[in-house]
Length: 292
Image (tube, rainbow, N blue to C red; front, side, top):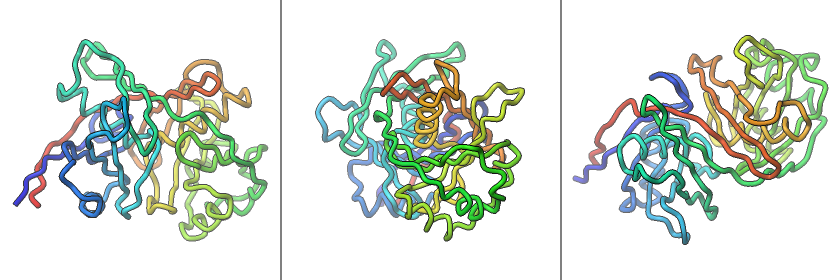
């Protein structure tokens, strides 16, 4: 019997049991891809991340992440953020160093670690330069698949944007409209396939007392995720879109997600031209041992 340790990390969270939970398996070099997929299925979370030895020159760590449905996900989102939260919290990283690199797929991207007053680390990750793939005017079809009237849609086209994963950005007028979404997964999956997108990021830029620039929900039936409470690979594209169109202030763009699921999450994205940097914090909430 082989014993393999794992941890549970709440990502983009200020307190335990909020944010997006991630199962993390360090020291995973001895696992086959088949075993990684089986372990991800066992944990049954939106994503499980495995830390393995890099194959790309200059990378400090390589990350492989799988959904419960066995789909490998790329891009620097909560799957990567949780790994770095764990690395910083467990003393795996030298404290006199702030910049590191991670390999995700074929990409090697920088990561910055900032220690806060409470010794909780703030992680900033560079995403891939944004690609504005294409826009679509099929608003009414998507609204209907989400159980919403076409009248609730914001007066702007939906757009597929990529900073590591292609997601559809679909704007609605109010936060209440976003909260009212109740998707039909099969129909939404077919519509997303038709526009070449993986997931659907539903958002509103309606202002609130919290001062956030966008209020969001994320649905990804393509990879078996009914709803995700915090999605870095969607927040990056949304921030790039808002910055491009002048619909968010300069500097860090603050995005709220997960409220409808009872797991409030805060994602911050700084956009400077082609530079998209995702920031957040979180905490390790559990440790355990897999006996295989």
